[in-house]
Image (cartoon, rainbow over all chains, first blue to last red; front, side):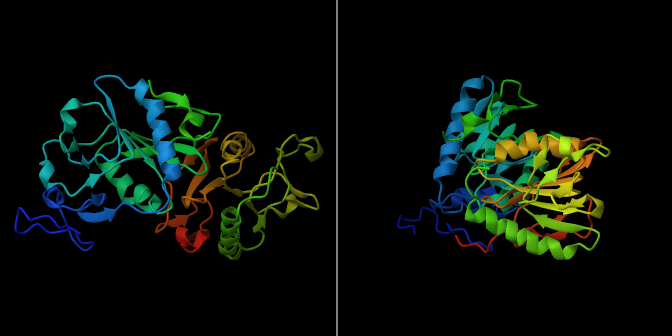
Length: 199
Length: 159
């Protein structure tokens, strides 16, 4: 896989059985996209991405014009190092790549990615990733205080808003074409659901 | 209705039926679409209703509701398997009807991404439980006998 010269003698490549931190993650040379959830590797699933990418693109186009400083909307792949305030990001065992994220604290933006929880994340499900997105990733978003998480089912064309309330995600009625999405937390994020999906 | 559902839709209905039907006993029974459900409030004349739906699956626990024509009155539980063409209807006007007529639980299945979202009637609204995916267990909050591994609702992984 890696044919370059090793700069550090002990650069290792990730294994599925490993238990890692950000330091390990930063040392890997692999080009594969992956996430680190509670220290374990989760590779991005292969397989058809066309609809996924069409939807992520359209959502980006629908949202970006509505976002203004100090908020930034960022498109995957962006490493999000999940830490609680005061923690050392190099020690974290939780590095995720939401499909889209809204970050309203410029202090979190770093060369390497986002250090700390985004304010809002969007995850577009695929059959291979639903379990991860709705299980361990959702738990992480909850634990690290992401204010809103949007779950998009791209084939059936629905969006489900989860809003953080009292340490839990309250789930709003699932939205479909013909309905308007209004973010409860971010009043400027409002659009017709149809805009998120291909014509 | 528009054109016939896609194979994945039908495979999921089939698998859910196989999982759910054995889990209930009389007087409860599961019915597969197409079964006409005439939505009425108690006392109303079913021939006057303007609301007749066909859930993909429904659980009916009151034998009085069973009629030659279908089900007269709201089922106790309905399952809707979304397709791109029907999501807007299922999640919009149909959902409103289920709420209005007192369906106790509504399950929304996204068959491609393989998730199930339980909506449980509480205080006149649907409270939505965390979306379930493979590897998780579905436990109906209203019907304790309805419990299964989400994976069992979906076809064996082909790809």
